[in-house]
Amino acid sequence: GAGVSQTPSNKVTEKGKYVELRCDPISGHTALYWYRQSLGQGPEFLIYFQGTGAADDSGLPNDRFFAVRPEGSVSTLKIQRTERGDSAVYLCASSFGTGADTQYFGPGTRLTVL
Amino acid sequence: GENVEQHPSTLSVQEGDSAVIKCTYSDSASNYFPWYKQELGKRPQLIIDIRSNVGEKKDQRIAVTLNKTAKHFSLHITETQPEDSAVYFCAATQGGSQGNLIFGKGTKLSVKP
Image (tube, rainbow over all chains, first blue to last red; front, side):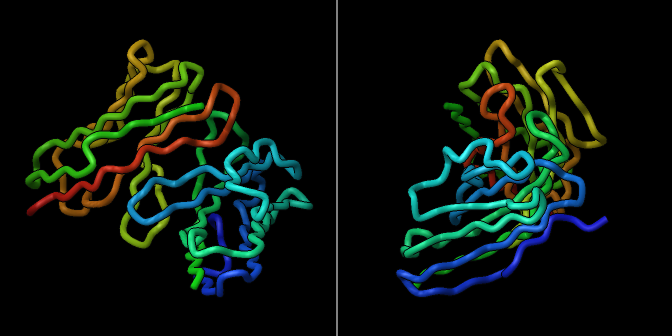
């Protein structure tokens, strides 16, 4: 079946602009995760959803970052007033459940803030 | 919170040799430890994982060992091939019931033909 998909694959924006990044998880997966990966680093946890609710948003760096998953499937990560330091690859993953379930990653969205 | 340390940061081996990558974690409640392989510009791909009720798991040329007492786990690749060249990340769950993973900084493995 189809894997996790993310759109857009690349996003270039100017400092101060608003961006939305989309994630389509594997069908039937109830858990969805957002990570951020900077060059040469491992993925860094941002937020995860169990169904429609954010189960843990402790990784969001500040209140410019927000994510939603209104119907328990597709999720959108929203970044307001982007800064150059927000440039990274934003990865989404999904799993059937939480805890010790395998997480499958999407291809990521490369965000560049000029 | 959980902290995961990974060593070495780079590893170069000859084709056919073995490669070992080691990780330590800090949260004794962590119960799931996956390893991901990431090629340049690609998504992380799960290669093997281990849960805290098991000490060792093997899948063909890849094996993982877990020492819960010492809070460390290792990836072993035998008979390495050039296509094994990539960055490998270890990870651990944050706590026992949380799903989010805390990743190590990665090991860049180069297999020379």
